[in-house]
Image (cartoon, rainbow, N blue to C red; front, side, top):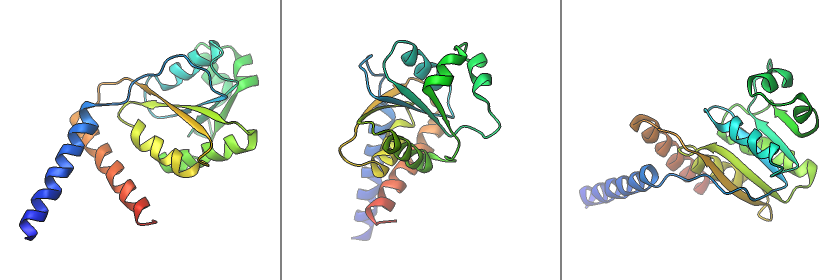
Length: 176
């Protein structure tokens, strides 16, 4: 009986990994939201968020997980964005150190501003876990739309991210 249970669990894990790896989240259209949240850590994320801000897709943007030593002007120069965009409309979130704390930092930022809709931007392979963490931290009435930045993740990136996603879901299910 235990061998069958183990085989069943392995089959479910394998099918889940196939779903996770083959059906990565996709970029979103240009619809507007109150805010944009960009999680640091991967190429193309900030480029996507800043392009949407320039297009007027949101009022404000939070960049979650920014190192304390980074200055807004440095980011403006690096991403060829006007300083005035950072002055008026971009907040550098410096509290988050991992995906879970990105969700908490984002929820607090949205609550302080009273926003009802937010666009989450992160890499395609990271979106499911990031979205789960954000949903855990947010009230249910806030609308979250997911805007994945396409990438070319390696097998090991997908493997580790899938396992972190499954473990985090299990931990939440158990109340941890």
